[in-house]
Image (cartoon, rainbow, N blue to C red; front, top):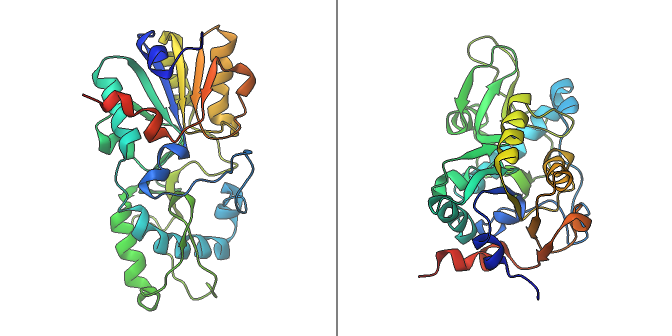
Length: 268
């Protein structure tokens, strides 16, 4: 007899929860991949290009300035609230998210590891100074008054599809040392900080099962924890529409929108 998601959650005391972009799509934030796990668009900016090419940084920040207006207004949906409820029930060992939107924290989750960082902060790559994205956004808009009316189609991780000449766009340097300012997120081609990996690994050792919510697990940084769980004999269940990299490792998969699949946690 097939187990339900509710039975799986009820049957495990310490869940290692791993979330991805599918958790936030109902908050109006686009995801990267289709149901086959393929890119829906061009691969995102890499760390090497961002750091090595001033023109690429201008393009990134111009598009991000437009995209932040929408991204910064996103609010948690039922999936985020359901996982916060799971923590309140004492059943969540940790919530490891690949998302950079901080919506889990906004929904009330406290024991969260932001595996790929957070988009609401900007960091100097020389002196490590951090500033709120809202403050950096104000600097961008002040330096580029002619760009205020520009609009674009929302894209993943606060990007926006804007095609124009970016050569006149001004990007603020660090106000302390003049260094390059970068979103405090892990770009493609950049390593996840080791302390985050170690913290997640320690939590995984304490967990008795893994629940994947809204991730295709195509990126190694998240998939490694599912593979480690399988090697340790821990049961793994995924809530995801379409293929995941871990399909062969799952006890079962629930192919429903995250908010719908987890709705029972908010009932009553």
